[in-house]
Each structure stands twice: as C-alpha cells, then as structure tokens.
Image 1 (spheres, rainbow, N blue to C red):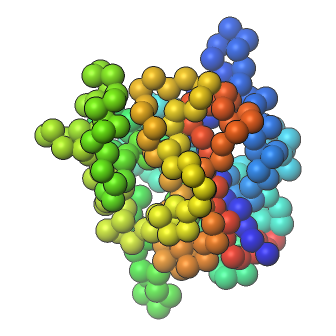
Image 2: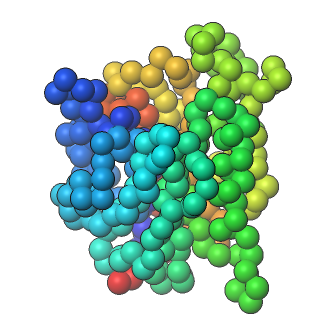
Length: 269
C-alpha cells in the first residue's frame, strides 16, 4: 500500500480579499489528489481552530506552525495515521517550519512542512541549515526517516537556470542571484545534509515547474521549480513516483502547482 505525500503553497490563505476566495479550488485539488500527508504553506488568516476545521473537511487532522514575520504553515495527516508528536522548528524563520511524527510499518516518520525566505538568499541558506538537523544519523539507529516538504523558494543546483532568470522582470531577479550567479545554495545545502530530491529520484510527467500556474498569478516566477519533496535515504528508497499536479482547479487556485510523491509504506494508527 502506498502513502501519498503532497505539498501545496495555497497563496495568501486561499483568498485574494474582497470575497475573492480560491479556497474552494484548493479544496477541490486536495479532494482530487487525496494525500495521506499534506504540507500547506501561506496559511494567512489561519489559527489552529481554522486549520482543524479545514483538515476535518478533508477527513484529516493537522498541526499549525505560527509565523512571527511571515505566514503560518501546516502539516495534515489522514487516518489511520495519528500525529504522535508535533511542534515547530524553533528558529527565526521568515515563515515557519512545522514538524510532526507519524507511525508507519517501516518505523517512525518525521514530516516537516516549511516555507523558506523568498527575498534573501543568505537568510534562505540559514533556514536550510536549521532544517538539516533532523536528518543527521542517530547513535544506535542510523539515518532517521524524514520527509521534508514545502516551498523552498530556491532553484536546484543540477539545472541550468540562466535562461529563466533572464526572463524574470528585473525587480525579481535578485531573489535568485548571489554575486551575479544563480543562487541554488539552499537546496544544495539540504542535499549535502543527506536529503534526496524525490522528483530527481523518481520524477515523472512532462511538467517540471511549480510556479507560476496559468491563471493563478505569479508575475515573479518564470517556469520555476520552487516546491520540493525531499527525503532522507531510507525514505527516498521508498519513492515510487513524484510529479507536479496540473490541470483543472490547480490552474487558478494558487500561483503554485502542488507536488505529490507516492511512497512504498503504510501508515499505522
């Protein structure tokens, strides 16, 4: 039995203000995909009660990590899984990082949902460093099972990005440059820490970018893959598939497409 993981930046809480809600579209996407593990970013206007209500509408339970300067993030799980422990990565993230543990037939799995700093590559790199700690080998048990999902706001170090950077409006280019070079340091740091890019390991489908969507806005993007599902090697070895979800409500519900991965394990209560 496969477990489906999904990450989705829903853009400003699924609402553009003035009754222009996209949350129904977000809900339709989640209902269509039916993830077992779901990381949500940009939960503007959400508190724990509101996230609990949204999670319940999907038959899930959730944990919210509040943000001091940005927007909250959340991690949701579907029964039979139960959240064994929950908390936040307590560092000065621009947005936040939520961490929960669930039981699986392969052992305990730590799920981290995060949203890295969009404007500063240096700050983004520090945030990536803070996320590396849970992946470190533990004495007596080896490398833990960790799934890291979210909008990392960083390009990957394995691709030539120069053409897409040149297509960006000048005001947005600096987000992805450091000393004139394309800034891929955050993803590279996570790779060095032992995280495996599941899209690179098991990716399928013709679409490789996660932002922008066709009708959800996103003038600051140029066909970029900014949303990732990463896993430590014990998790990456279980990856059957990883792909960007496109079409239908994904085209307008957000400026980001969701990413999903199917893992060869089972959740247990």
